[in-house]
Image (cartoon, rainbow, N blue to C red; front, top):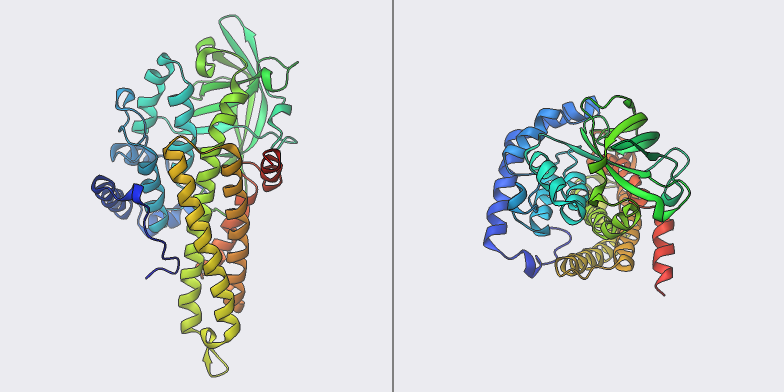
Length: 387
């Protein structure tokens, strides 16, 4: 029995979902064995070929409508892809970014022409996506970005730089957040769709050396007078970018909260197994009352976290997940993740600081969740606005 034994929510009790989960699990077993994933960690990125394999297996674009080359599923299918990825420890594969963050921008906001042009390629793996928001010196304050996309004939010239871009080394389709009107703040922002192949003036910077998430490439990107066709403003209208971003952020933040809940469960499971096996002073670590009290406290909090996340997913499926609730989920679950993983590492003693043990990797990987998708300080501001 798992440490966090919350029953599967009713919305996942569907035979088709179960069959899909088995198929996704088999794909990861066959195409992402331990040795291959380890090579991704060593190289700092997932090989491009894996994206083609995932596309061919129907792992990409699972909730994209069939009319645009997708598989016609919903967010539950996206959840299956992410859950099976976690269970099989397929590090670095940015399915959450591609499937649940970037493709929805096109599905919900793209013009008919943009959907028909790009979605089939993103579903097949012919195109791999990234979104370029953050700039050097500009973090969560997106209204203050300095990257510009200014009119030039029948298109735009893109100038600026971005940093901390997930999939930055791999992506050949990038949604770039830029100012089409530098004199405005929110109303001046547009989302530009850039295909990188043959894009003169586009340059990938260094692959950033992170303290965790070793297999996920994170990069700097540079744009020097890069030409973007006039038809490549998302939605076809300038100045809508900030509102498009705000509309999609609740789902992104829920996905982060879901990942935090999974990390909490993995940390508890590996720690319970460790303390029941490791002995000190003539008994197992588990036999000490302090160990039991610490883990009991974390189990109680982790259970509450999982129930909260499931409730948020149910709201999302009904179209009822609001910004404040998504912000609370992202804030509270990632803070709890940090607490749980840290205390679980402590129960490992010196072994917890050794990368051979799973808890060490969970510790390194968990730190970023309180920062990306909007820092937790920003989450608290958003929560307070609704009070």
